[in-house]
Image: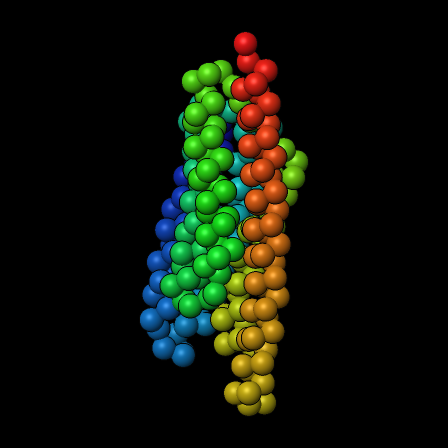
Length: 202
């Protein structure tokens, strides 16, 4: 049972690959197949996102925290976000700027942690940073769901279908920009915390 949290984390990594492949294939698929592939990608992404909560919760509940889990969990989180962003870009969703800002912050903070670790300094995860991950996952899930919903719902004509798709994507883009703003804000907080820790170090 104590291996379950790490199994969920590894499963999240595997599902990330599934999401990326499905979105990449959907990008070149026809009108009939694209909604189906997007729907499967959405399901895989949601399941992966749910494991992000349960692996940490189970690790604490079962007293099964481990060094391997501490290493794999943030890697799995960032890989899931990065895989979804790359997959959506392959499908032509215009998230290059907010997606790039999110990835820049994530890798910059990871590099900052690696720099501070040999000095014995840590950057504890803040409450806002946890919410940041939640908003990222909701925004990406919403954008992945747009083609699936557009294909599944019935419309009077193609104009109505296009209008729905455009409005749904606009809401998703609004969410991803909100996620990018929170992501950058938390990145700035971490940078300031690191600076204070270094200045306080004798």
